[in-house]
Length: 221
Image 1 (cartoon, helix red, strand yellow):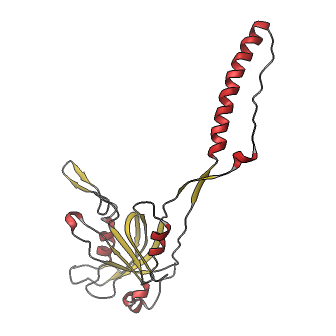
Image 2 (cartoon, one colour):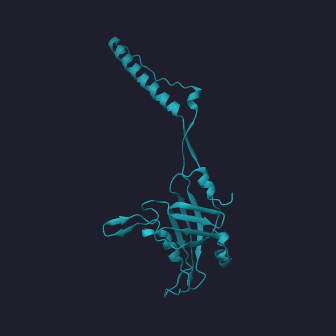
Image 3 (tube, one colour):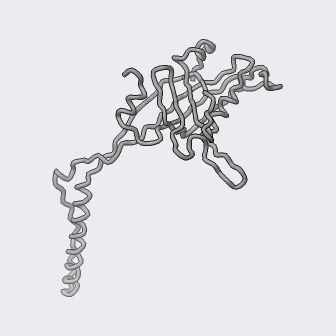
């Protein structure tokens, strides 16, 4: 993966930013996490179809065949016959018509970069803020769901520049790799820390979205 060279300008350019805002417990909000988007952003959907008529017809036919086979076996048993009753499969064209069952909830992946360019920057904090969305809080014997996954879910908003803004999201996966290159100690640390972190955040709507909701993610469309 190629890392852009003009990092300072990219990080401050809203058009290249990934901004993730989340809800902490007790209605406290996670400070806006900003990163640089690295790659293309894919969006897609999928439908599930099923031939309901065919399934119902096959079940009815199979029940009838099983009943007929039982009667035939009883008769042939009395006659001492070795005649077998073959399975029969019948199908009409109308049985192949597909009916919509459901639409898949889309899953989005955004690849992003955190980089320490100023003395106060610490990319570890950026990554750890996002990790709060995928690890629970444990207090004694009590396990509380991660932020954005308790009570009413869908507590995150993900924005890519000004052209994509998706509220009511859940974060499914957070995965980052810290660089081996080190930055100078920050204002809060006495030791060097990773210069940058590259990774991806996987998110999706907290419930099946309508076509209008998906379109609303793209302002002014």
